[in-house]
Length: 615
Image (cartoon, rainbow, N blue to C red; front, side, top):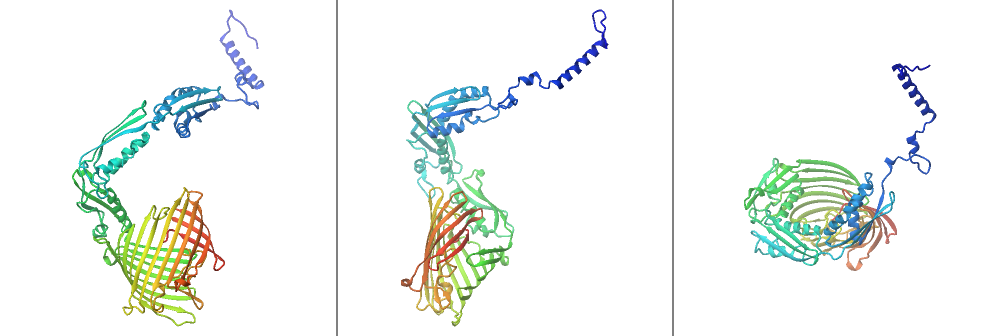
């Protein structure tokens, strides 16, 4: 194809054909030479592969030269440190944060009480190998040299009273006294603690009127001033109940709501709410004092959500003491159309079968919790076949920390031992008991103790075949060792005094061995030999020492040694020793333990399984 030139200019047709030919030529060049000029200029890595600068990660190091506590504070909180590994970082951002670092360091140091630190910074290296060096000399910390605490309102001039320290006691309890380092966090904590101590009892409308901290960096001193207004003293008024349908108000009043006219106490409201939930009548409860009324005597609002009136459940289980177990339970919180709580159960185990029913009356306004019940128990352990029918009436009082009770029982027993004449003893014992608990956690304790003591007896001729006096004591002590260790000391002592052992029900006597007694021996295998059977003895002594160490938060190992036995005379006590190792798991439902124990007296190993805290 030829092109013609007319008067020095291309025709429109020629221009179009020329553009098309150039486009085709460029396409052919792209096929022959696939690497463009721009691609040729792209940097390559060591393997000759192109590197996209947009994907290069900007990196740098931060080195802090300061005492360990200060170094950790700065490493965790400085912007230049926190953004170190961000994909958004670049050289411009780094320089901006580098310039701001000294002021940021000084602000952070002030929170720890250092108001005149020497701060030096350096930016070393080139792009891709940058290092930021921050050197800090804290200097002297600022310390509290003066504290002024002033109260206004009804609290002025008050003396210590029950659950309230009084004006001077509040001042003495100040958490940031003269001589302490002035840290901002401690300053805020101290003010909040004083306010809570003032407002939780008697003065719930207290306010923080004024606070001020004056710091002098030159003298390294801080002067503190706090002014609090307690307002007027507040007392509890009427109890207003919302949500009752099935049960009478006596159920709630029997659980001791705050008395009208008693001084406001936040802890009392919380304890009352806990009692409502623990009673079983309610699955929801909210107890508040209506402070919005502005009055000096305020109503207590109790909102409850009633539990189901009737409950039934079926369960299966296994115990290394009593083997397989099936359980049927039934509860009724409105038994015979009264606010009485019926608890009944049937337990069928390999070696023991039990059926019982107990009726609990609502706690009365004097604090007494009355109950009565009936039980049938059939057991066959170590050659002794025992069938017992029991009736009981019980009165208890107190709280979970210290509970007392008095119980009257009737026991009618039928004992069978192969080769011996059957025995049918009966007794009507009266027992007084107390339970004392002082634990950091009632369900999984690591510190504290709990003790139960009983003393009782029966008199011959009053539905009793043989007079006797019975005493029993058991306890546990928990002690924390370091961050992950626990020591548990456990003990039991018991004695039955009578002229003749015959005629005293075997359920009153003692036997030992098993998960909660002497490990390494079978359940109730330690007792008095009578032919091929093992029967109860007059005296009991058991002791245990255990160390638990948790390698993880929930899993640990236990090492233990147990000793104990039963005898009819103290002089005949021959202690059986067992020791071993176990695994512990703090499950959501409670502590679980599996122990492998060796019994020295028998030369046998026994596996023991326990769930929860048994006491």
